[in-house]
Image (cartoon, rainbow over all chains, first blue to last red; front, side):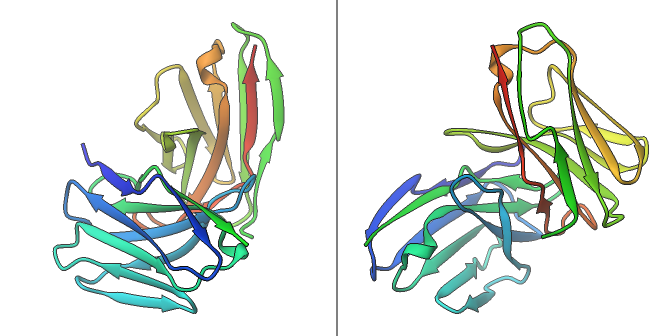
Length: 109
Length: 112
């Protein structure tokens, strides 16, 4: 079945450094979504990418969808302590959304 | 936040007992989902529903059953709880299958 791999599993950064997490699907996706989960909280939808090669920005966050619609990335510029949490990608194909295992981001002030 | 509530929010139960978790939405969305979240495994789909009385299995459905008799409620039942079902359970809703999902606050279940 469809699998979504996400790396790295953990990332520790100094405040102000950049951060990137990568997502790869075993199959071509109709869209890819990104979610953020704060410690002790529930996943919160951030964005959906639909088009091949699409790039979207939300303030310091940049999301990309690969040309083959099988991979994606989330890049955070100049991390802040408010960015702490786990970031999940989720791929939509012929099945319900399949979530990656997430990247847990720690920011050291 | 989307109008999703889960009950109970915390539960401790003994091995072998039945447990039912409830998800309630006020958004009238067609799709509802149950996930479990465990360290190192991310979010894994247990069951989902695409309408009243329409449900299907997810990745980790063994030991779980669901029911949806009303649009707003989606119940998850552990017929005979085991320690391996200790987890945090999230309910989610969406307008359509591939659409973004909105999650409830979660239920922390401990099976002793």
